[in-house]
Amino acid sequence: MEFVKSIKEFLFPQKYICLFCKDNIAIDNDYICASCRGLVEFANREIDLNLPNLEKVYYSVLYNRFIREKIHSFKFEGKSYLYKPFGEILLSTIMDKGLDKRIDAIIYVPIHRRKEAFRGYNQSQLLGEYVSKELNIPILKKHLFKVKWTKDQNKLGRIERQKNLKGSFKTNNIMEFKGKEILLIDDIITTGTTLEECSKSLIESGAKRIYGLALTSSMKL
Ligand SMILES: [Zn+2]
Image (cartoon, rainbow, N blue to C red; front, side, top):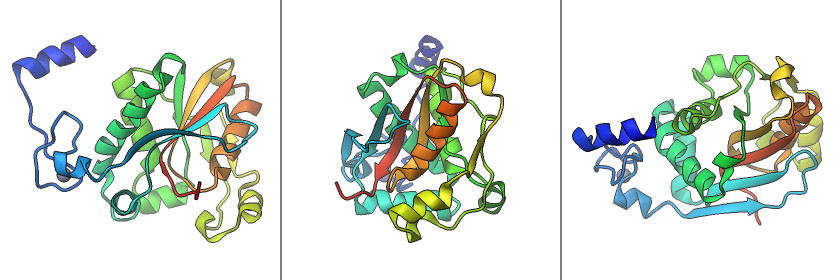
């Protein structure tokens, strides 16, 4: 598939506009122009959060002003198309860490169906679908759900967050978790509580190992 894609790009080179600024042409096929790329601080960092149900946790770029604003647009201003450049950013971390060779499936942090209805999409699902398609690794879309309506995590302290999320996630079709190494995608890591709660459900449902990956992390490290 990759080969066919490169032949096609060679024969019919496509110019993509940068989706971050919509002013310039993207340098590669990653929807990011040179000037926006200069504002993205790539980190490809592993963070040690001591979360019992996660094998490893990574994030792609530093939480600077540019990224903070773009993630805000992605989540709250309806700019769902930003999954493309953000998806490319996640792919660069996946390749850098060799995760593509380890994982059997991709999953994403779900949001409550009422929130999804209001927003029109789940930004982490869009990221997961993009990465799944590019890597040709299956995505598990009918397997993890947020069933509890919870308070906004970023208004709470760490202990409160854990209490708030307890029992929030439910799994389905658990036969498909059995013995699998799964990449769990989220947009931003604040304390790691959400990733841990999701992973806990996945491990309890039979998954072998969970790797967490987010675009960025707002944690003071
Ligand atoms: Zn740009």
